[in-house]
Length: 488
Image (cartoon, rainbow, N blue to C red; front, top):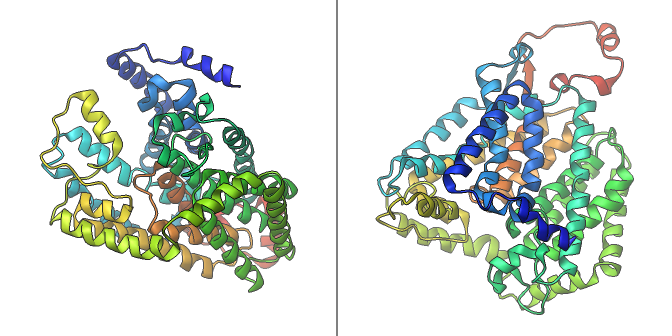
């Protein structure tokens, strides 16, 4: 495999000049946008698959075109956005989405003044800053209409969850390989203190992602997705999800070396268990037993097949000088206090501390900013520094509206199919209020995508038709074929 990966850069566009890369990117991007316009549902699904694989393409297949690959999934979404919002299918006009659309749009619009900050010094960089904050928010409105039936939705979500198996297997191979391996490009390009466990020669894995944070996000979201699928009666391949996907995700969490994934997966497990015991997940009576079985399989696999990974993670946790309270409360508060002092009233400009911004300045010879934005490892503080306190409040109020809307939808929902999806979105939104979203494009896309998917329970027909109960059952004798937009 390493010989194969070593030869892949020969296929790369590394010998092309910047202007040639841009020309090729514009041509390919135009074709993708055109295709996505006519196949918007397929384009969104392709974008979510690319989000999992783009790191592998950037590291091994096209290392000379990393910047282009970074925008590949977004190009698919552009065509889908144009079609959905400007030229919607006639069938979509029959439904309306009952979420606080006006408030979300107004709060998103309040972010735009941050792009006018003179410290940015470039209209292109200002547009890019807006992109990293706002580009995935339209998924809130698009995702509820992505699937036509419950059966289609469940089937494709299951296949998406199964993509975790090859990604996790790559992680296992990365952990077994050394830091000098072509499989561990990230370890060679970063400092040992970041890419290693702090002791020994093992490196923290990144799977198909460019950075550890992207792989961490993948572990968290796919663990929650797998658990939600186990809670649905319609899901097939449950034995593979329990005995394959979840144990591999648990192993990758240990090999990744981040304790956040362990804590959040535990939080999601507790949330689903409590909901199942309280009868809030429908009629899947075997769900609790499946969860316990999956946890037992994970424990056995961890103690037998992945003991070294467990040992590395536990040792790293012991030698660390912080704890959950420090990381979740004390550290964010201290960072927020410092950022309020640094930001002043208007901040340093949107996206000014993003690593890609500096790379764009160098590549396009854009002058350095008058004031260089300080960098924080807590995103709340970073948002305050970039946007200023007032606009930062608008950003987090927008996020809180999503949190309250999805929790309200969960408690109001009566559909046993949609309940687990709503709970997944509700539980994931809570920890990600503090975790990286703006500066973690994987989390940005997945979080707004999952939240939008949960909003399917808030889609209602514009004109409600009333049928006698017998007539309604005759129209939809197979509940799995019920239009997902009409399922409540």
